[in-house]
Length: 367
Image (cartoon, rainbow, N blue to C red; front, side):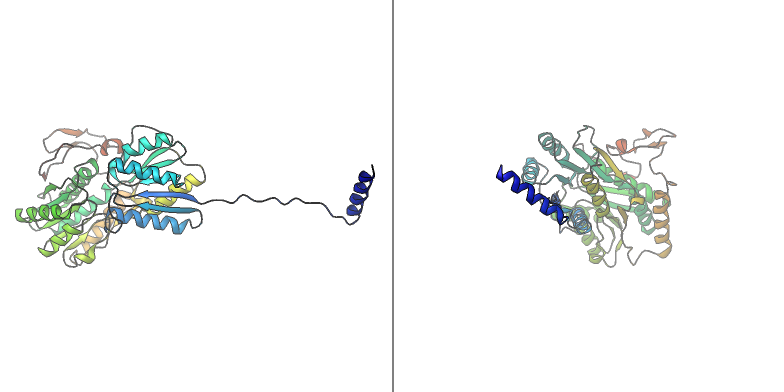
């Protein structure tokens, strides 16, 4: 009884000073989103993997404090990539960018085991919907049309070479687009293709380039993880060269023409923000030239001003929707109708393409 009286008197004393009792409430600490990147080759390859790593760095700098990134390089398209994904997940990564063509199937298997982790695969069209799997790509073939126009203007022999890595749809599509662009300004152009069946094999790439040089081509284009070897081989043999993924004009000061050049950073920011604010949705995300994810690299000193302007104008026409490349009627090199009159090929069709346009010479191995 005495304790109750004392407590009541103490409360009245506090009230006389107009003091309200308060409780200390700790604010929850916001943890950065851990984001993992997986690359099939070295991030220093001045090619595909270099471009993605530049995008990773852009993401980390732009969303400083909100994300924490890590990366794994030289990860083959095999069971090894599943092991790497599992390790990243164990380390707390909740968003993983799997940046190589052959990573899709492993990504689907890992995602099924970890429904709380989002995996984004680059370059494939996924027809197996999952709530935590998405794909992303830039319509990489669009700038190849403008690059083809430059090559078509610059060739003197009307014969060009193309060294490709794996004969998969994205590379077939780029080869076709490059040829169509060249033929739009030079109908006599032929493009000879040699496949290395690898993403990175410099000795084989050099041999492929030399075989095309022996055939008499005067322009060499290439697409694999890094086009350094082909570009350097062309320069040594006094040929024009066209690279891919990144601007490597510094290794070919005389023969360099141009190439498609990636800018993944803004797209990585866009996708990651959607995960942070819970607006991310599964599906196949595709971006255009107007989204800023791809541009033409610097033009070489040999490219005339009028040709540069023509290429830039074509890029703008494509961005504005005034130039549609794969619109019917369109035939393959055997004369079969592949895109009927009045039809426009969509992403799901183009990203599974397995045929070559007229003017492409060389085998198309079946995978």
